Length: 343
Image 1 (cartoon, helix red, strand yellow):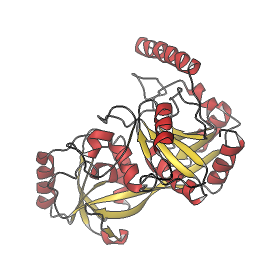
Image 2 (image 1 turned 60 degrees about the vertical axis):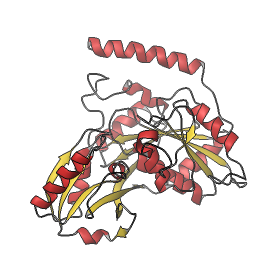
Image 3 (image 1 turned 60 degrees about the horizontal axis):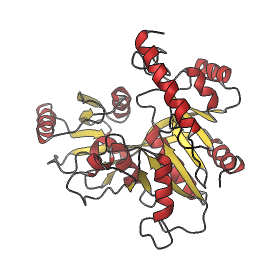
Image 4 (image 1 turned 30 degrees about the horizontal axis):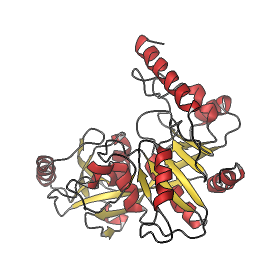
């Protein structure tokens, strides 16, 4: 262990001990969707899919999220409409706005303390609430990016692991991508390997945690739409020439996704994760698209939420990504959640 890793580990260990001693429990079951590395393993599409399936199975899901880089303080409901002096993504964070847009009848609560966020939701949502009219359906909390959030007790911990690049160089921050030691995977209840069926990874996970089932998942394009929400057939992009751009943790994954549905990527511009776009950026992208004689300018759904107040070109499209997982995953998840207790 290098010196930077050692100092990180000391801080991590103290924080872990402090928060476990003060851990609180909500009165309804909590499912956590998280990972053990920094970077994109696809938590947001997975969280959306779990919430949608929860609704289909008769639950009333509520999503609790930190709202990374969102300026709003204290617990609040994420509203994607423009009711504020700043754009929703700046107020709540990129992923919470994306989830609120896709899950229009599921409350999304932003709060750094997810227990406080859960209590806020229970206090403000009722049969008279226009945000989420509760019925007699059982309430289910879904904790976004929660594997390290020890302040709140979870009934089920789902850990997503990138099948292509599972653990990077296997070093902890700041030398590597690990948020905590690999041995902590033993507290996971379910593993979901994303993007590739990696047998060596499956064997390693079974060695660390033989009790947790392992499922495989993939991300496929769910739909293509423009800024106004108009949807287009995915086949429309076949054999089209596009200029793609994104500001996400795993740009290569997006590039491969676009390549799978288009004939040619004439240009590909990468921005930093959670990048704040400006009019200058849009002008540049539009000029590049035109100079290369591209049919479309294409980006991610996450990036699209940050472009609302900018003057975007008419040929700008985004791709919505869906989470597709092995059969049996949802049966195990929702059966185990209530059998494990909670509520």
